[in-house]
Image (cartoon, rainbow, N blue to C red; front, side, top):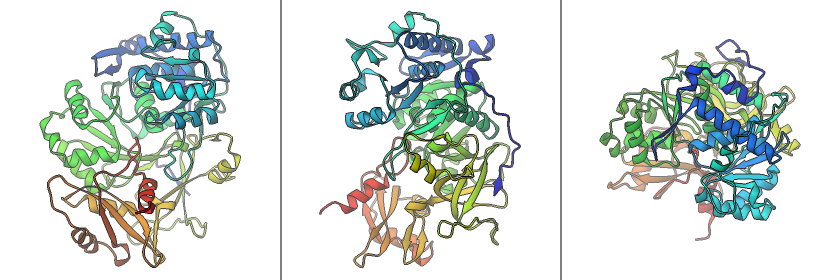
Length: 530
């Protein structure tokens, strides 16, 4: 068993609302919490707290209480913070939806989560209304924040100026957030996160991540995803930093917002790191205010991270987590400069880890001559681990063992220096003639090729029904690139069993909104009839 290098921190026995806003001083109240780049409008911490209270009061007057689940289908706009924390202020739970969901996908999650209210914005109303109607949610329970005929809107609700009731519950067991696991490897499941889970993870993250009150954070990763919810929204609010919200990722807008609003801290997913490292448009903007870039949600290879950091003159860091762990379990400590950026850093305080052989179940504790353990499945125990999957006791029991360790399904190694490197998913490892081939390793290698803009690798079956590595490659603009070039490039740099055996050139790699490669989409493409 491996411990965090940091001493445990005390986790406040508070609700999320009390933890974030309970000690708001007059000085903090005057600070800018949220900036809407579309209008330039700023929301102070004092105004945000007042809006949260008024929204909670309006919902309470309409019957929302600690047993209610409220659906939130909303991109990154300042009102997201008002709604999310207004619901939690009442002790009600929030289930967040991917803004790209179809009406059918929204309906499934509403039904599974047991949501009786839905909050959205007018651009997403057609899908939201269709799903709400199918679930029997009436129009007066479908709030359209920016207004739509026949529905409550945020301005009306806030103008009622209702005082929310005092509520009392156990933060350790009371449901706060119900995000759904990404579904990249299976059917999405509701992840039950308590107030203590969310509070603990922010308090833990404060040790490794040096976000300060005078930082401006560009909030481009979606708040509906647990990474955005905890590391962007809640951590920034706890540190009294300012959030510049972005509705969707567009590289030009991303760079313009950094330039116009003086953003200093970026939380990104790997595709943005690739763009920062390689895209020519980056040089057209002054983004010199950025001092730190933190990548998560999917593995980022060290070469790309270093190239991005050199190009924009910023410190590159990486972390790791899962929806089921609120999400952060590992992050590169800002206090250490000896940890390679290819790693995900060290465990947060209060976090225990095991590395377990997926074939034998034996715990791996010995370091090899290279100072690393051999790869194994990463198990996590700590206050950030979820309460379980909603209405799925069997899935919960399969994920969290009797000792309280969550089995991540990710393959990792530990270095003698205490840092971890995530190699791949257990289920995504390619078995080539019995040898394990991590797709992420080949992807990192191919991204270092100057003619490769993006890439994904999966296992496919050859004519003899043996699994082999296949690369889906997006060539850089305006270059000639052949299958033989790709194969030769890899073959010169890896063991023979890791060679890429097939190559397909594509226009784009399918990815989730959080930046994860959707390998299931590539497999579906591979298996589609010719």
